[in-house]
Length: 343
Image 1 (cartoon, rainbow, N blue to C red):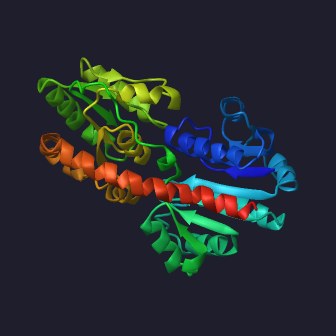
Image 2: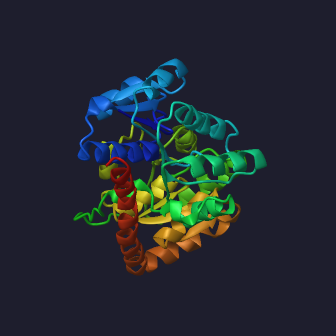
Image 3: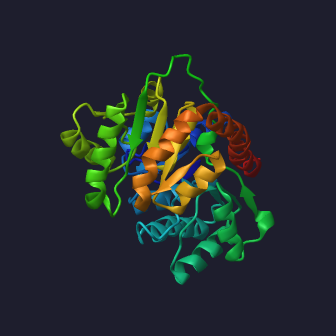
């Protein structure tokens, strides 16, 4: 039995996509669905959607019992180990890792995007956990460097890519129809910036674009609804799922996203992505995809940047298509690592 821990069951499409890839890989490696146990905030939904077993992520008694039967504990992927948006994330995820160590269950750190980690205590804990793990993979060079700074030997770390990059590029045969998608997630300056976003949406509409808002994680939908109240014609794509996401991107010229996986989804659906940098992981994914990004305190120049991207769309598209090929190879190394430790 394989026990899997991550930010699952929170209606975050990016993390759901990571879990889908991981479960598909485990099934391909011969693990049956009933032998994959996912720790989830919504176990019924997770089990039904993926055909696996799921436990409530805070049911420590059930988790302890399951560790007694597990052959492997997988922690990841995604941005689990950071102490900026929450100081509870690291104690929760590394607490589970420590339980696995106590139960003598081999631990795999999978597709991790690390940091920022500001607390010296947490930094030392992260370093110890990775040193004791059976295998580990990270999704970007910044995460690799953090582990090196914490004394984790380089030969023990696989530099891979986000697991979602295992999916192949989907080139739409539909013509582009002057549409822009926007994804925003909760951030500290939202109240001050809301009028700026309203003005930006109206400007896009004045230029002849249809504008849609795509909520991809907790809190996004509420922001889209607030903008919709002030911006006539803004379409909010509520109730999005991984199955319906593809249709949203059909015919869209460009997607502006704060969320890392919003940029990945956009590139994989051959829609020009532009990042909004609220966190180092967004800058990292933009560098990997070779796409432009804007700082949130520089929104006044965003429209000019979008004009440049649209005017040079093919050059931008060629760059991220080339990057996707390399990133897919990197993502597949996560699967290879899991296969290797399961032999």
